Structure formats: C-alpha cells, structure tokens
Image (cartoon, rainbow, N blue to C red; front, side):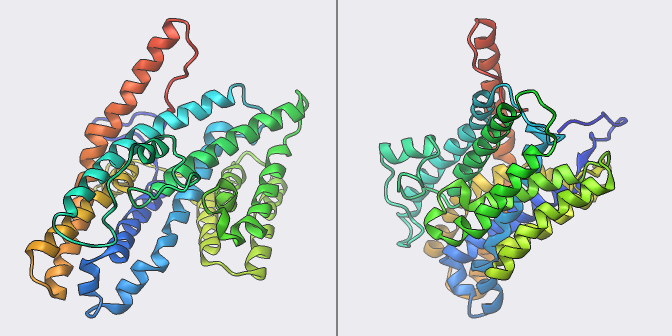
Length: 376
C-alpha cells in the first residue's frame, strides 16, 4: 500500500481496519479447517462440543471478509473515483494472475508433498490421493474447480474465485468505458456494480451449482467496491446516500427473501469499510504492529496453513496419545505453526516470487515485449 514514510523507526501508514479484518479472518479460516478436517478435533469435540461445532461450521463464513475487502481494494486500484474506462484490461488481469498464481502453486506443491507424507502416518479423508499432472496443471491455471478436479489444499477454491472476480471487475470497468465513449457518465460503474450485486444475490448465490464461478460471490465483492466509492469524503452527502442505498437495497431484499448469514456478514463488513476503511494507522505501537504484520502475511497464511495442519494432525495421530487435552494441544500447535510458516512463506516465497516476476516483466518491456509488470 502507498503511504508517506514516517519518522525513524515508524512504519508507513496502513489501512488499519483492513489489516485487522484480514488478520482476524485468516485466523478463523485456519481454526475452521483445523476443526473441520480433524482428526485432532474429533478428540477435542467431546470436551468442547459447541466450540468445535462452531469452528467447523459457521466460522467458514469468515471468507466473506476477504471477498468484501478484495472488492474494496479492487475499486481503489481499477476505478478509485468510480470512473468508467480501463486502458489495458488484459494487462491488469495478467498482473493479477502473476501476483496470485506463483505463490499459490508453491503452496499447492507443498500440500501435495505434505499429503503424501501424512498418508504414511494416518488414514483420513483429509489426505489427498497422489496429484496427477493434469490436476496440477488445472491448479496452475486456477481452473481446478471449474474443470472438476479435487483441490489439493483447503481454500484453493478461493484463489481461483478471487482471480475470476478480479477479471470480471477489470472487464466491467473497461466495458463501461467503451459504453461511455468519452462522455461524462459518473454513475455508470455504480449502476453496473449494483446490477451485478442484485443478480448475484437474488439468483446465482441461491444456486450452489454456481459456487465455482464468480457470479455466485459477486454480491459480496461488489459490496466492497460500493463501500470504497461511498467512502470518498469528497462526494456530496446526497451522492453518498444514493450510493449507500444502491448497495443496501438489493442486499436487504435478498436477506428478506432468503436470509443467509454469509450475506449479512458481507453487509456488516462493507458498512465497516465505508465508515473506517480509509483510516490509516501507523504501526508504531506494539498492537498495531502485530495487526499490520498479520494482515500483511494473511495471504501466505491462507496458502500454507493446510499442509502445516495436515502434518501436525498426522504426527499427533501417529505419535501422541489420544485424549482431548493432548490433541487440543496439537490444535494449538498447528495454529501457531501455521502463523510461523505463513511468515516464513511470505518472507522467502511470496515476496521473492513477486520480485522475480517484476524483474522478468521489466526485462521483457525493455526488449520491446508487452508483458506488464506485477500488481503493485
């Protein structure tokens, strides 16, 4: 993120609420998968049945936080003032792929190795069959869900959906610019986005057969985009009120017709982003330093936690006595190890891969080729 440099020993200002939301959602996703997949959680369930049931079920809607935050940030990146028009949509999509896919594939390969290793220590449904070349290729193209291949890691579906949603947003901004054709149409993008939210929540999101496709999730993503545009303090109060109404009315109608907790959470997150999403904090204090740090590594934690949790589950299943206290300690160990592995993965995999793609892109640009640089 951009921001003026602070004084000595002070980190650049960051969007504090976004870091807090990403950090909190990442923890819930790790705990959800620990509770859902087991087998450690199966041992802990008799001791804490309500907690394990909640983590294994309802806690999964924390992914809505990532969807709304991603929409908020994509509006900031592609259309910060809700203006129509994008000069190079395919370039933007390639940049997004270059940001998401390399660390995702590195984590996917680690998950395949971890699953093979874990299979030597336990027999459990969370252990995947050996990966095939076609399965790995589908993952590399972020098409594994669409093509019907089993995911090699929990949460792999989200990376593919994030890429689809970004592509939809980029093409939407470009198409709106073509429609506007140079004319001042400041409400075109909000209208298109509201239409997308409405179709998503009143049709696609009601049909689970669409859950491998962007339209199923665009309601939450579009709410994030609307939250960015409505939070622009330069807008007149009447314009802000209209933007809020355009976002809230279809969501309210969708909740009235068929209440979905995931949609309600998306609306709450969008409202929080509207109120506080642009507030910047400096991570000078210890608390904000931790929050911003966890937010910064949240994607790496999201990618790497499943193989880590799988190996800890397998080790505790093979070498540690049964019982809720021993296995509960294993769950806590897996949680902490996931955070540590996420920090290592961010430092030694995600960040270097991003730099390599940037260097390769700049080299091609200097030689006259048109591959764009990596997403900033």
